[in-house]
Amino acid sequence: MGNFAGFPLDIFVVRYVLAILAVWRLAHAFSLETGPFAWFENAREWLIKRFGFDSWQAEFGRCPLCQSLWIGLILEPIFFGFTGVGDFILLWISLSGAVTLLQLIIFK
Image (spheres, rainbow, N blue to C red):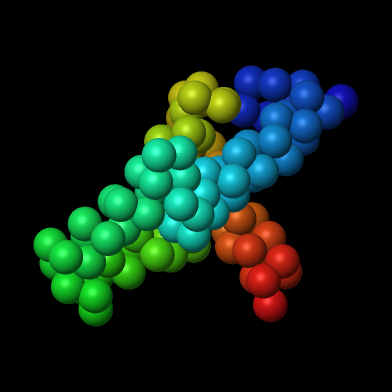
């Protein structure tokens, strides 16, 4: 069996699926849930008050697909380490793409 991103392929697949679920969970929580002590909801309300409801900042606060891109950017090197620019970009964008598919399947 081969390696990808420094892991044996079977271990990589398990880590990748778990990374997808982690990014999805965080993006969903930050954008759609109240959160502990209403932190997430308060942050979204602050964005609306500060920048306006139709601003890109407020839209970002409500959009799990948008947030998955940035959460994936932060978590990809934590989950997989840095094995090169190509692997980094591939894993980062594919994590966000997988989260988008998952979101669209669950909430069609």
